[in-house]
Amino acid sequence: MSDTLAPSPVHNATDGAPLHGAARLSRLGVVRVQGADAASFLHGQLTQDFALLGLAEARLAAFCSAKGRMLASFTGFKRTDDEILLVCNRDLLPPTLKRLSMFVLRAKARISDASDDFQVWGLAGSAVPDGLPEKAWSKTDAEGAQVVRLYPAEGTTRALWLAPTDQPGPVAPALPEAVWEWLEVMSGVAMLSQAVVEAFVPQMLNYESVGGVNFKKGCYPGQEVVARSQFRGTLKRRAYIVYGTAPLEAGQPVFHESDAEQPCGTVAAAGARPGGGWNAIVSMQTSAAASGRLSSGTADGDALQVLPLPYPLLDDI
Image 1 (tube, rainbow, N blue to C red):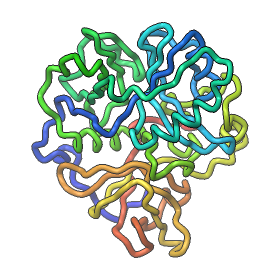
Image 2 (cartoon, helix red, strand yellow):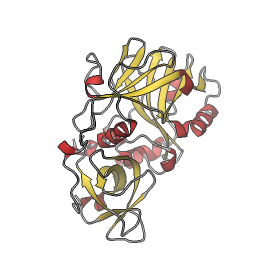
Image 3 (cartoon, helix red, strand yellow):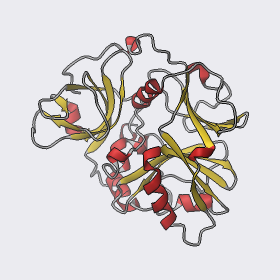
């Protein structure tokens, strides 16, 4: 792996900032899909299996173009038997709602923006309910709220908490939203934002390794491209966690020393490291991640170091 500079030690990463608490996630919105065909409709549109979705589980899923490029990504779960909520970045709501609605046709499903009806929080550490199963994408109901287990980050347990806006919020110390966004990055699971729409097929963000793609389900937009990338060995890019001292943001190009003209990767998500510097999830050429100097923004930009992923890749299992 590239080793051009050393980040702050992990145990000093937060510099005293708490890793236990609840953060109100104002950047997230909620899509409601309701009706007798809600599950079957989403099953035919997204990369994960919604036909068999139970009330005690959630799904990470991508919504792709016909070319297999990600238009949005969601944490989705059933609130009731005929109501599914999809949590995604708020900046993707208008185009996503419009495009999903195009495919409803005769399905008994209604799609709406329910962001004003729900509050979404991120729970970390001791704020995560004790009764929540340990497996990622498990879901439980807790006093009217829906709680979804997420991938951990920096050894910190995490969960998504959603409840109607007229209910009290979670009882927990306040966690800065910026710290939560950094934890999201360190989990290695990137949620798509407007800055990187159509930049990746799901495997470029390791979605097949973190529960975001089901290769056994039926057709959905872009399925042929996604499947071909997996089974024909055509995928040359993966998602990696990096560290740098200069600010990083989604959509920013990343360069390798071997080519000053063409970027080798793109920042998918980024967050300020509480102890100093920045971390990001970068989708880049596997060959570039293996060795050599990486830089952000330009070929002579701030040096980046590739850090270990917190989970095994599917082809490494």
